[in-house]
Amino acid sequence: MRIRHRDTEFELDLTTFINLMVVLLSFLLISSVVREVSVLNVNLPAAGGSASAPPAKKALVLEVMILPGQLLVADRQTGPLKSIPDRQGQHDYAALNDYLQTIKKQYPSLSEATILMLASTPYDDLIHTMDAVRYKVEDVGSNSIHTALFPDIALGDAPAQAPGVVPHA
Image 1 (cartoon, rainbow, N blue to C red):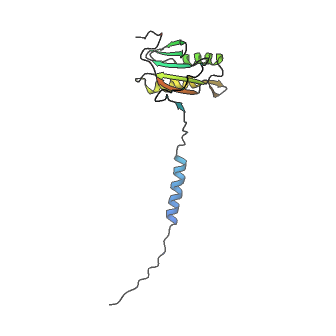
Image 2: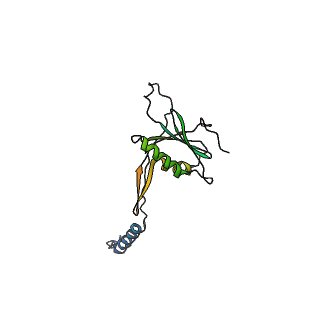
Image 3: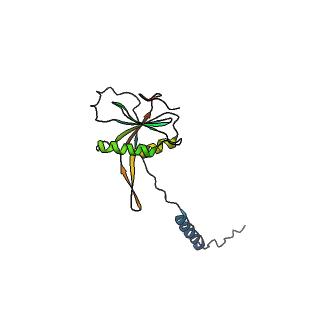
């Protein structure tokens, strides 16, 4: 039996493949959408009560409650400050933002606010309320400037019946 040896040397031409990859890469880079991801740090209440001594009372402990038919701004220590009724079936976020701007003028060093909501509160209502609490928008020329109001936001459950407030029908 005779063993044949074939000429196994061959040349591999990769230029067309490299050209294809260059075109595809440039197309993907040009057509990709650059997205900006923003991260918002939110404080959640602790699972259990702490055994430490209660902290000293602050001048104002701001709470914003998202309730059916109204937004309620309250001080945790003294009670409700202002009830903002819905306008045309929607929460009035502009009125909430305006009122929070007046509170910010009275307490300029305050940066914390707690948003309390019911379990049935829609997600969009929470986001719009957080935006109204976090910053105010000022138009300067053709630019919009976001100025911080209460950027340190904590979330919690609203009581079934808010103290001192008559529920809206």
